[in-house]
Structures are given as C-alpha cells and as structure tokens.
Length: 257
Image (cartoon, one colour):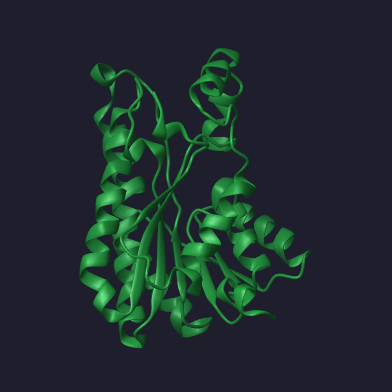
C-alpha cells in the first residue's frame, strides 16, 4: 500500500455509527467498512439492524450490532460501555441518528419540537460524551457529527430542524475546543439534499425536485454514496490536523443564491 492509500486506510479501526440500519447511516457504515473499518451498527429496531448487518456480512464486513436508544442518556452510556467491554474500543464515532418533521412554525407541535431536540442534538451530546470518555484515556479518537445544509440555511416549515442542525455545528466546535488537546478530532459532515428515506416525500415531489435542481449548482439530488469520501477523510489519518470543521457535501447549494 502506498503512502497516499495509508492516509485513508481504516484497517484495525472500529466505528460505531448511530442510526445506521438504513439511509445515510448505512451508506457511511458500508463506506467505512470498504476502507477497512470494523463496524458497529446502532439503532432501536433490531429487525432492521439484523438485516443491515446481514447485508454487510454478505460483502465480507466484520460487523456487530448494538441496540439502544440514542435519545436516552443512560441507555447510551450503557450501550457504549458494553461495546467497549464486550466488542472492543471505539476508534470512530459517526453521530448520524436524526429525524425530520415538516409543518408551519406557527403550528409546530411542542412534542415534536422536543422530539427533534432529543433526536438531533441531545443524542450527539450523549453519544459524543460517552464515547469521548473512553477515547480521552487512549489519547486518540475520531468523532464525526452529521450536520446539514440547514446548519447554514433555512426553508419554510423546518425551523426546529434548522435549529437543531445549527446546534450540531456549534456543538462540534465546542467538542473540539474541549477535547482536541486529548488527541481527538471532532468534525461535522453536512449533507445537502440526498435521496434518503428521510427525504422521500421531497424526492417524490416533482415541484420540489425541479426547484432543487435549479437551486443547486450541480443541478441534481445527491446519492448517499457520495458522502463516503468525506466521511472516510474525517475518520482517517488524512484529517489528523482538521478539527472543529464542518464539511459541506451539497453540490454547491450553500455557495450560491
């Protein structure tokens, strides 16, 4: 293997990916595995986790599952400790779990607001803290938080989602400020508009898809596999001096009006 390949080689590394039974989480888990990482899938639905693990094993991936609710701080701590003790050290954490709910802000239900906060931002804090406590003792580790173009931009009907993703961006900066001195690199990966189950209603809308294609300099939706390169970069030695950064993978949508 040449030196350039070694920079992105994840052999011997173990990655926990939250919310990874489908969509972006599964694509990132698969992508990291193709660069040598051992994978721990996480979610709340054991049936979906088992199916995702089966698909990865079919292509030769070493994979385990860890079923816990990332919105429950105690469950996260127990889950992370169980992985560390029963499977092995977590070298890479991908904080991917998230949700969306669309409705006009004046009608936005309080329970949905609180659910978005728990799922999109509290989970990042819970998992980040639980994993970092182990990483700090080892003097190394990679944390990649999944932000969004909505960390920078807003659209009608998703103000609370925008708030949570803006918080992910700044929590990433805060994690860097506290933990970089311990040898950790904490960055955020911010997808634009990708074809995922979370966005299926928008993908199916001819009106929205037409608007998006005109609004995005690249002129199209993204495919989830196009996030893998950025995730591997942020998880590998190639990003050893990149910290507190948010990397937008969005076809240029954040760069133009």
